[in-house]
Structures are given as C-alpha cells and as structure tokens.
Image (cartoon, rainbow, N blue to C red; front, side):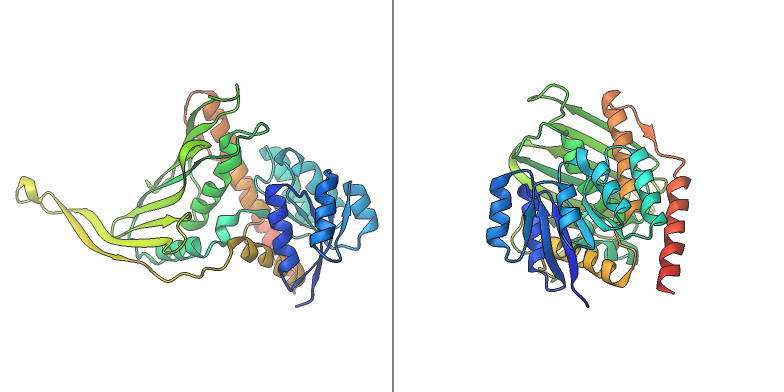
Length: 357
C-alpha cells in the first residue's frame, strides 16, 4: 500500500498520542502538524523527523503537501475544522465527539458524501480487539439473548471546563454498545450532578433502552477514587466482562446464567448455573494504532470507514437526547425517526460502491 501524506491538527495530551501513532505507522507519511502552543510545535519537529509544524490551519493547508487531515483539537472546533478540510478536498479523521449537535453532524455527513471524501470519527473502542471479540460473541449467539449491558468509565482525573462528563466520556461507551449490538436504542435517559463547576456535570448515569428489551447503563465520572474501564454483558447463556485497565486477561467469559424452569416447587422456579470462567486469547495490538491504520487503508483504497460519519451522527443523536434528559432531571427522551441518517448512510454506501467500480 502506498504511504498516505497526513497532517495532524491539535497536539494536546491525546493529540500527541494520535500524532505519534500516525508517525510510527509504515503506511503513513506524517508531513505536518498544526498547534497553537509554540513549545509543542518545537517538540513535534524535534521528535518527529521530517514533520513541519504550523501555528495555523491556513498555513498548514497552504504550505504542506498533504492529502488527509487528522483533527484532535477541542470538541468545539470539530465542526468548523472538518468542514474547512472537506471543502479543501482532504480526507478527514476527527476525534470524538464528531460534533456538538445533530444539525452539524448531518451537514458534515452530507458534505463528505457529496465530495466523495473519507470522513471517519474516532470511536476508538470499535477497533479494540476485545470489543471485536465481544461483538462476535453477541452476533454468533454464544452469549444467548442479551439481557443488559453496563459500563463504568470513571477515575479521579482531568476535570474539563469545556464539556461535561457526558460529552467527554460517553462517546466511547455509546459507540462500543451500538457496534456490539448492531441496533439503535429507542429512548435514553440521564441524570447527573455538577459538584466542582457549576453547569458542568462531573458525574452522569446514562441509560439506553432498545426495542428488543435490552438495556444499557453507563456510569461516567471524573470524581471517583479508582480508574475503572469495564464493560459487563449479561446474556441468557453466558456473561462476559471486559476490563480495559487490566494489563493482561482483559476479557473473561462466565459460563453462568439464570433461566426460568417449569416449576414443580418454589425452589425449582429459577435455575441458576455457575460454570467455568474462560479467558480467551485476544490480540494485544494497540487499539489506537489499529484505528489509525484503518483510516489509512480507507484513504488509500477509497473505502468506507467502520466508524464513518453516519456512525458519528448516531452517537451525537444519542448524546444530544441524553443532554436534554439531563437538563430535565432524567425524563426519557425518544430516539424515533432515525430514517434520515439511515437514508444518508445508504447513499454513502452507493457512493463508495460507485467509486470502487
């Protein structure tokens, strides 16, 4: 595969990590980066040989020979930067959240399709080998009918002032759940509190409800004593736990379940089975590098990304509904009427099929 010429916008804590991955991938030629901080620009040029650092996006677009743009700047800048990049005919990878409202997400999705550009959203967990394994377990029926999923994404860490815990953390868990289940929720509810900064929720409890009776619950907080990144899936046949903080043995599958029986007596009404615990061998590849490589493959081969603009829109739609629920003290908000982005997704499919032909 040919090397893709890339420019990165934003070299904050996460942006530096993203830039590092692209720089290290053999299918990428990291040509340029853009960052307001002079010290970070100097560090980039010192650490990444051949990379030129720019202070503004316009300077980078004018001075650098790039074909793809990677945006890892603050969320509030995503919409204008993605729009500017698409109009300049660059392929785009943008970190989560895609945008901060549905209207902007829909506009960018249509713009990307109209200009035949690769537009990919950084839903990192969709590229995690353990999440891929969990998706296979669910789709194959090995776990049985899925009853519910719950996740925890908490720690005593960086407290943001530009977005609440919902918009900062939930895109990871929402995109993961949608990818594993392959279906969309019908309504969402959320409750939270602002303890440190007025109007910016530090802790949020988010619930998703699906037509097939599956429930998902997401606990988000940056005011917790422990760093926890877990996903638990409870099915009618088996259960699974994904612990992303664990150094090894990140996935455990429990051959345990509870099933109703034809009751002959009170004690026989429910049968509980406690079976073995299986720890499958799963690739230890770095998820961020897998995600970055996927983007490079899509640019080089002109194929549609797994976490494309339609996927980004699905997540933003849920986030926006959850924010409305949060502001109304947990009142459920419906998510019916998703025909628009499904139709746009089908148009994108036809567009990529035509390009490959």
